[in-house]
Amino acid sequence: MAAQDKRPRRGSAADEMLKLHRRTMVLDGRVYTVISLRPGSDFRFSTNHFHDTWHVLSDWRGARVLARLLWGLAYQRRSGTLIVIDPEHLDPNPFDAAPADPIVVVPSERTVFTRAAAVALRRQLPFRQRSEGTVRWQTFGLRQAVDELREWRALGPGERIWPHRDRSAVPAWVDRLGGLVTIFGAPDQLRSWATDLATLGTYATDGMDYTYLDEADYTGEVQIFRQYRRKVSLASQARAEVLARADGDAEELDRAIWSQAATIRRRRFPAIEQPTVTD
Image (cartoon, rainbow, N blue to C red):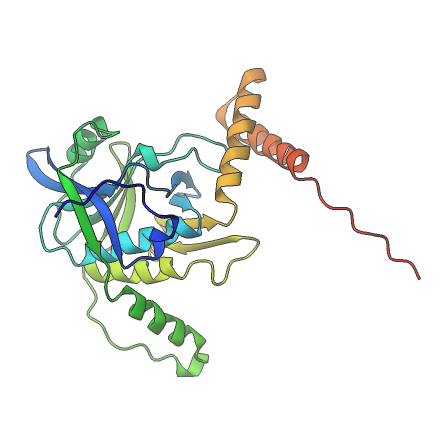
């Protein structure tokens, strides 16, 4: 059933049910059910490619909502279903403010997604086709799975006996297809990633945490920052200032942008001088 289109609450990242949009699209001769965040949803993401790994970047809330998207997708029975995070919910990346690519999540055992389909989808983003309705995205069971994962992590190394689960023979991988950062995973992989994403931040270091999406070849990673939005703002300002006055190759520009972002950060948020301790 379609629901009234209202701006989602900020706390909706933790709900067991999300309201998402649904579209039917024909791409490369196949019919797809495309699920996306609703316009106005206060969730932000970015992407970049570093050390031969595709990164999805966000904050704590982005990780939580991504966990729910992946968990629900693992239980979809209709072939051709996929999730798209479209340009409306993307930021420039928080390092050098380069533009981000849209993100697609594909349940690899149920949905065939070719490079030609990716190209066709990219041409239609941002979405110009109206949503066909609101989907109530169920994520029942995720909270219990997260609690079980936390209990397991709290055990001593010799006590960690994880119950046997059937594993997919289809490998997980992340690639850039047709201008889209595309994440392929079987249902068990999507569920495993979802529980990891839902606990990101538990072991954060300096306000950053991450989890790999493909531990075999390290083709994909989700990385979150507590100050993600501040970092995006600083990088965007730095990029504008550097490009306004500098020429050079891409690597030199990147270094200049990183340096300028650090300068702006110090200017905006000067360190508090610590009092000198004397005897």
